[in-house]
Length: 222
Image 1 (cartoon, rainbow, N blue to C red):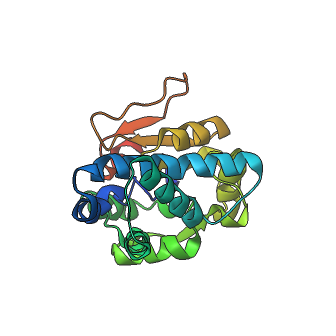
Image 2: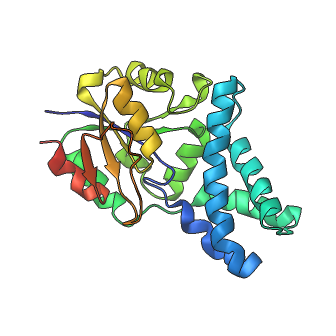
Image 3: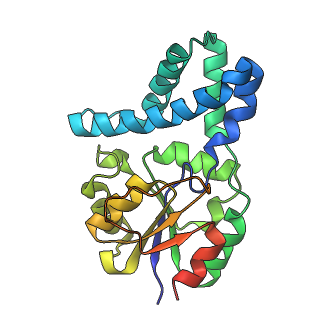
């Protein structure tokens, strides 16, 4: 069977920790905790804004999360340094397994879409820079819904935009909240365990499949 595949971008296809080297040059040993806080707060801020019906571009959540993390760890970055980090967030690399995995799925005849909380423009540019844009049939952003994942509204919007159904679409993500959201909505899902230390939330809502990298997905769709 041929499926419509919704790929989360940040942390699933694109390595958000790719910014670590720049942070380390700026702040040394504080780079790791700041990077982790930055990512966690970025997501938290999107959740909170979604619940408040106060949608903003995802880049605003990213910028605010950086500010919070700097204050938390008492890091004094200049405006120029913060701007440089925000710019680098637009050109992060893909994980090593991504190109090969996407190529195989494309050859298998599935339809591939990037599906993100980020704006369509930001995601498209990110995929272009990572040299993986050509594997996708399109980019679907939550910006038109004015709501962030894991709201069921955004998964419904994905199906509408791609002319697919719950039964023939998969959400692929390294983020448990995204997988749980799509599973609850009714899509098939694959959790990408990017780190051996990553834990799937024990909510009793399980993904359809668990994989270590994108290259493993093809065999799960047979």
